[in-house]
Length: 501
Image (cartoon, rainbow, N blue to C red):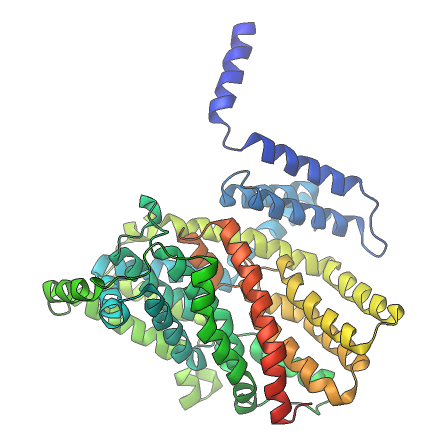
């Protein structure tokens, strides 16, 4: 019997996939939260869900196990604890509900489509063209990616489709051309830097145009409601207001990232000649590359809502539907095979872990945790007697940094923004409403920088493996603070010139 026990112990020591000390810390954290007195105004189920969510985030930060396993843990805990439903069947239905979320499938399909760029060689060709044009310095390539984001932003209402489906495959191809590959342990050569540029271009351009990300029209509607219709931002007004701070952020971002996450290869003087010789070796475009170009043109055409602009809203096609059309076109033309689809592990891994985080964020809203938090903040500000400057600043900061609790900008804006705007216009003098409101509007996009689940673009880029979790969160926080300061100071002055306050 003792020999059997020893054998079992030896097995678990070698087979258990988690890190023991981080696992112990995470488990203790969960029990401490559950034993703490439940905050007034929260239901028992609501507090239980908060404990599960916070524990999952801590487990991901401490790298207890792979992120997909942590997501599976969250699904199991929600289902077993029944914090979202009175029955086990209802709880598991809630836990799995987000796996049908169109945004999540847009992310998955975008990853699958990007495989075609690698298989056909078109991605390498695009990367080599970028290198030939801008490749003498790594930072020049970074600016090329940022410009690509800026050009696409006004016409691509899905920031996920833009940053994850269009720009990210190009970024990966450029990194591969320099043999910067996470699977080889060489991601630091250039790939990590370019992946961060890819990511941090996305929130900035999303802030610059109403049509650059799906939640922006909702922000415009909430602003109109909160101000009683006195401030309604048109497409032109929004673009003009955000242009100066947005362009400055976009100009400074590649430089800032070169300090926060410097690439190992900074100067690549031989890269231009190498790229040109490789392009000559590749010769003219092949059949598969032409198919990829055609599919990407179709995707951009539909993601930009061109049919709806010409024929009316009845012809608007959902971005996820568009992505599936593109994937189907690649499969039936033989550009990628069904085995390629099945073997794309990063897509299916993302489906699980991002789906679990979206599920918990949605359930936090449904069980009243987000509403409770918003009401608590409003009452605390009113009762504190703080000045309007401090109150307005606090509202913006809490709104932005509460995005750590959300896996969707749309969900976050839907749950909290109208309440925060309403409180703000009550506390901030009328003459300064424009300043406060435009900071809230810009913050609703800037908050995408914070985490690897902050917006649909994040899990696509994070899932490619170029950036570690710690670096992602650290750089994300620093960039968020820096961009908020630029919008507050430079943007504030610009908005003064425009007459918003």
